Amino acid sequence: MQRVMALTLSLLASGLILAMTLHPALARGSKVRLVRTPNGGIQPQAVVDDKGTLHLIYFAGDPSAGDVFYVRKRPGEAGFSAPIRVNSQPGSVIALGTIRGAQLAVGRNGRVHVSWMGSKIAEPRGPSRATPMLYARLNDQKTAFEPQRNVMQLGVGLDGGGSVAADDEGNVYVAWHGRGNVEGEAHRRVWLARSTDEGVTFSREIAVNGETTGACGCCGMRAYTDRRRNVYLFYRTAAQGVHRDMELLISKDRGKRFEAARLDGWEIEACPMSTASIGEGDGGVIAAWETAGQVYFVEADQGTGKVGFSVAAPGVGGGRKHPVVVYNRRGETLLVWAEGTGWKRGGAVGWQVFNDQGKPAESHGQADGLPVWSLPAACVDSRGNFTIIY
Image (cartoon, rainbow, N blue to C red; front, side, top):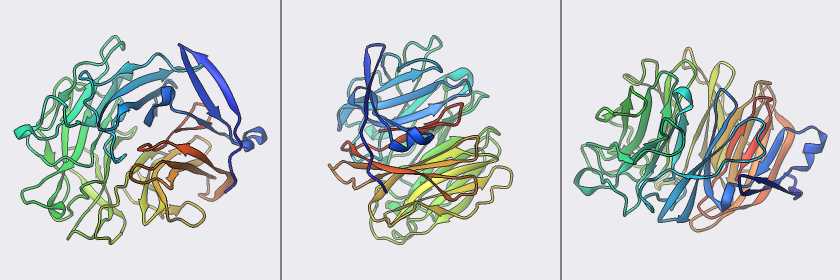
């Protein structure tokens, strides 16, 4: 991969200065640009809604007990809006380990929903004062977030964080993995709490994965809803404590029943502290994950749930983690990942664009400067241009 040539631009918008680093291929028509997370934040999460508005959250503060902030950028605006703190209790978000951070979804009428694993001081607590699975939503005026709530009513043992998804019908899904009926990773369950009223109320959580799959305790997971309102939960198993496979749970009835598809196998007697990603393609959902230091993506048909062949990032893996995948209307796919990161260690961002045949295109690169505990985000605008946020 070629080294990124740094070119600094200053964008002044709403009192925020954004530093942007452009890949040299941009001048030759490349559709990838790199943008720094606003205000020196880490762990960005980005969603572009149907109107083209970019919604972004990021973490700031003490990694063991900090805050999450929300900003947005409408089409034609030069920069992001002024930040709004998501968590109503200061210091109630954790960023340690990278895999436990906040996640973002946009639902009906552009309402923003955020979920996160609570910090050691977070309130309200879970059952028996356990670590809570917290949730907050943007108010009707879109000026502030409502008070944070714990949606975990039964389970305990939250470790790898959770996820949130929302659709245009007002359904909101908060998912996480935690302890099952027996101690140990091999018996962990994936739990799902569902709201049918845009997050005003949530049902009691239910376990949705197989009893024998387990869940990798300190690995992250993803929830997602597609345009057909199918629900996807993407997580790493821990069967027998060694089978750290990637499994995609698919529901076509608004989260009532799920079918499972195994995407990749990995036998390792340790938790790799991995994350995953889901995006939507042309007639399919695209999922990305890490196995043994390499990152992959695959497309699953929305109608049948059939999974295609996985595609790896070019070159030799070994230190690649935290993949993100997005797809544009030209049929191109952008795969982004972190390189060289570790416990209390930052690294670099790598990326590769694939053409509509799934083959690597000319646009690829690497950029240093990924902060400690952070990971990249990516999005695509209405013109099909890609943006990497790190």
